Length: 371
Picture (cartoon, one colour):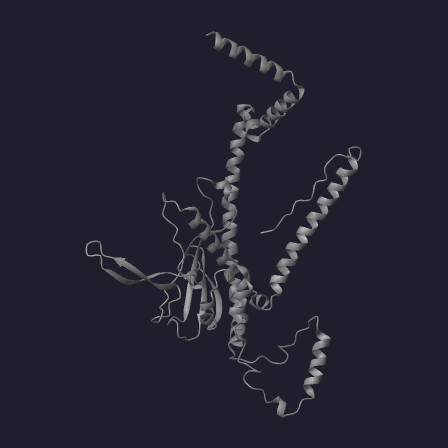
């Protein structure tokens, strides 16, 4: 009992010493202030009549979310309308890429930064002999060889899944198109990959459909920020015998428990390939949860589908030449540079204010990177 009493007295004495320390008191007060100033704690302090009116505002906000959903439905209808206007241009792009149509001289005119060099090259070209004009097939190949394969190589989001054994197959890819869901149907879009006849599979078109949702969640209506992809569905690839690059055959030895004999069996296991894109992870039903790895894979799949629809298909030639990628990188670098410059100005002001304290450590600007 005496020992407990002494311990209690020591704790009280230590508490008194701490409470007499002004720095400790200031830290505690700052902590209390930060807690008391949180939005939720402030709402709790409001009178009941004010809370009632806030609930009315929330009802109005929920109605706004449903109107916003209708807005995005009309945007989708508008996308469908303009897709029909774009399609003749995309059809012309396809036949030029395949070499089915040769564009006219007027269609081939383009004023680039190297216009003077091009004029000089044209002057030299006019001086060549008739014999030199007889170009071989290597000098004048059909269409634009490896058009889509080059795009896939240039885009990091696709290139990360591209394997060496995928490339001979993708040389047969002649077009990628986007089709929107029909009027009155649930919102979705389908990517179509058009292939020439080849030695790998019998399909002429491989498809991937992305299902979308454009309505507020009844349990969390304020989280609505527009249409989102909620699921996707691939297609069955009819691989020719021995040509399926999405699986590989391994040999495995098995030992009989009783007799001790050993046999070798062959087994097919999944293989890394771009063509796994057409066999996506299925979103589970309600009540079932995906693990973190599966969630990340789905998120990456949805992001890639959106990127195909919004960027690659509409601007294919710019991803082929790399100009779209350079523009994206320049935009990112510009943002970073601007932020670093602003941080530098702020630091300059801090140094000016604290010039009387030479011992103060100089803070280096933090690096930021846009996704």
